[in-house]
Image (tube, rainbow, N blue to C red; front, top):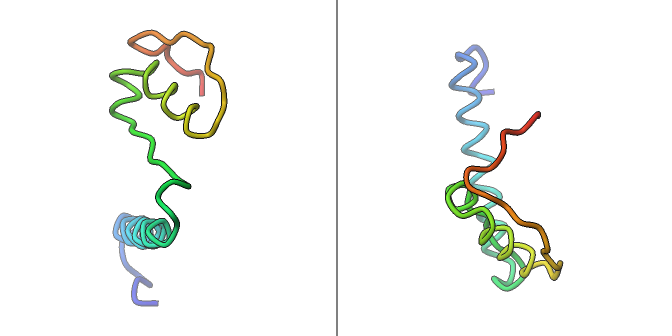
Length: 75
């Protein structure tokens, strides 16, 4: 209610902030070995290593080969 009539950008920023703080707080309540964070910067700089790390965390075998830079996405 406090955002009613505010500029759209301000509303979007507040919503993003609230959701992010809630999610991070919820993650802190879970055992650290049950979740991991993906790094966008590392995905761009070292895609092969980051995908391999994520797959290892979730127990999926990675057999692909990624190059730098990653190919442009159609979506």
